[in-house]
Image 1 (tube, one colour):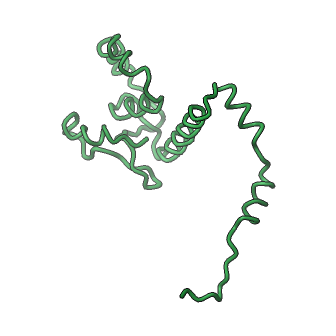
Image 2: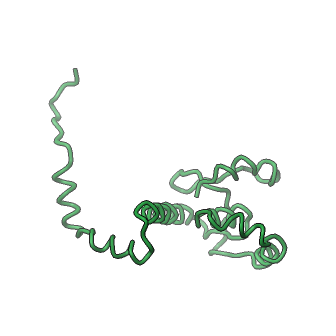
Image 3: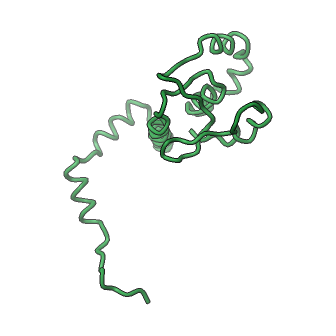
Length: 146
């Protein structure tokens, strides 16, 4: 959920904020966000954005951008608030989403084709653990670095 543009411009667009960005509980720097007791959407601010700002020009300018940019925008503008202490979980979901979006684009697959590709190439947890054990470097505790 890191947004370099927002970090750069927030000091000018939102000078009242204590910071230009936020951090998750895991320490990852992300776009500025606010927290609430549960996931919240400011309906009035969302409606104002959709009816007053989101015109055809805005739509055409943003239609080819990544989906994560919408989430960053809504968070940065305070229209969406994350549940208290859950930012790291949302950050992890965002990273997974970006990974699979990039994979689909790189492999030129539709979402349905990507699902089929992932299912056909998946392995069990047991096989995964076996591969980790097999591929782990053998540590020689008595070796002395030269």
